[in-house]
Image (tube, rainbow, N blue to C red; front, top):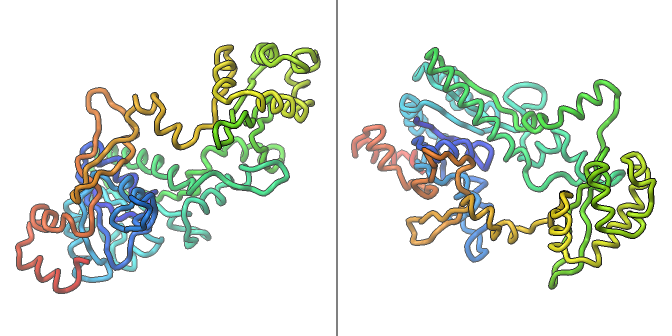
Length: 398
């Protein structure tokens, strides 16, 4: 499988990263004339910003070859068209319309490679009244409805952490790409796929949209609460060193409640009106206050263990340190170390899927600018030294 990766930041590059993990030859094209946004995102070793040592860029581009091309140059675009003949797949995430302005839209590319599959990923898709809107996944989260739902009731919408749809979109894009490859294997036909990140984020909002269609109800934030489950919240526990620790508790039904109330005791155990879901929902504020009082006297890990032991869902609100050192995460080998050519090592996430017979592991670190120019131009495309030198003099290889 041969992939030409023209994507930026996270949403597009993660598609190529996943394909590289399982053995695809992925050539990433970028130019130092316009620094890739992900290169300026941390973490950075020592905390000093260095576009050649970005942890975010490494995580999204491990396993790929790198080719420096300034696509503003006609000579560089000619090189790209030669790579299109080589490729099975092109992934791009430029602003809608940019590929066409360069003469690199799908209609032109398929003239060079009729069976080519191209995937374009952008915030709002390639066509329509919002297609020109630029932005990252935090805007996608707002456009898909998440910002409005995450936050306290009658409070400010706070949204999910980070550029939400930048991480949702690649999952949909990759599945679509695999379906297109399967279709091509059966029919010989390529195709162009348009992935709008905000639309991918809407997929898990289906129940909220259906509720509006049927009842006219506009979805609002509920904080940590649930329409049916009480209690369903996070509660502050006894301080652990210098840090506040919180525990998430979810009492799903009457059976859970009976065990939970017996464990906590006091008013929760003695009040018969709380034995039903309806009674608990009516007394949600009081229950939250009582559970909060109880948790404040307990260590978070003790609350977790005691409630899990009786079958009530509970877990400490994990910190990044908790997750990184968790034995289950270590068993998954979720974080792996990749050696870089500069003598340093980088820690990246492992492949998202663990296959028993064909396990995946990146074969190389992310590319520095022009690291693989000689390999791609000479070995992949078969250019001789004279042609490569001419491209360099023309300013195409920057």
